[in-house]
Image (cartoon, rainbow, N blue to C red; front, side, top):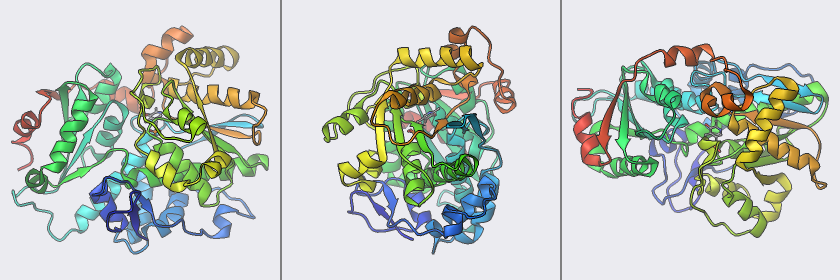
Length: 446
Ligand SMILES: *Cc1c(COP(=O)(O)O)cnc(C)c1O
């Protein structure tokens, strides 16, 4: 299996090469050159017995790692990465919530970040010499974050040997709990609070990757959300959930995905393309309406980002749009398999209140976007099919400052999150420049 750039102007790479490369040299994103045909008893089992996520993932991903050095270790990689559950909780015969927030940082990004981490570590261990010209052992993972990604990546690499993680986040612009999930680890996780905004952080990361000398010296590797190593594993929990839903209800479910950069939604569409029993995939966005405009007009036009209550989805220019368009070159095919709804903050708040009042369930603002989209979908006459899985992308305790006032109650914090919140912050504040980052990281890892 090779990976091609969505812009078609870069050499084809193996999985591990694409993972190391991050963004393709032509500025595109890596996608598999084809979608393999999986064994029929995997995608359409006659006798259903539910595999664990780790076991299913290693079967689904096997052909995607064909000819790659990591293929022989895939089973171990999946077992280490997916050592926490992704339960499907039925609300009624037609609706189920896929809870993706039982990992170390209580959001779905743990799945992708942990899979990526296992791949990077295995590749590093296999490298004959991982000693860089500076004498430094191992790679440095560099990631800029507006909130959730940094925590998931930090957690995935925490205490791993010969790996250092540099997380750049905007000082004073993320929640206290988000900051703890980035800067509460210590050890090999270096957290930098940048005096600037998220765009400054992203610019610094880009400059670091463009600085070839420094890159070579530190052996930088990117862990941002465009990495193929984060996207592929996400298809697996959708695959598994669709099989479980079908086995339970004898119906094929659609999936409603809270969407920002389109990583999770593209993963769901990849699972569908692989033949798993999935109907439509609904792209549920907050007030950022670039995707809704695209569906309405057929023309792609990114917009400036709008701040909303579902802040992990505050994206005006979704990076995985290129992957969506490469999967669906024809608009009519996209509209057959997908639809989109843009949800306001008022609708998010209303859903959180209503779900608590009617069923005592508490959802995070992102998951609430999916609920609001499903309400609209079921009201719309043109709906296809009635059976739906809602992806619950984060635990509500991560967004307590928004959710608690709405429900008038304190939310219990899951144990993994609680132990992280109890740790002191270990961060360094720096100016928003590459020079400042270089100086601040000089003494690391020799
Ligand atoms: C990142 C994130 C999203 C958006 O996922 P994309 O893959 O960027 O579309 C949704 N919900 C939560 C809680 C997130 O952290």
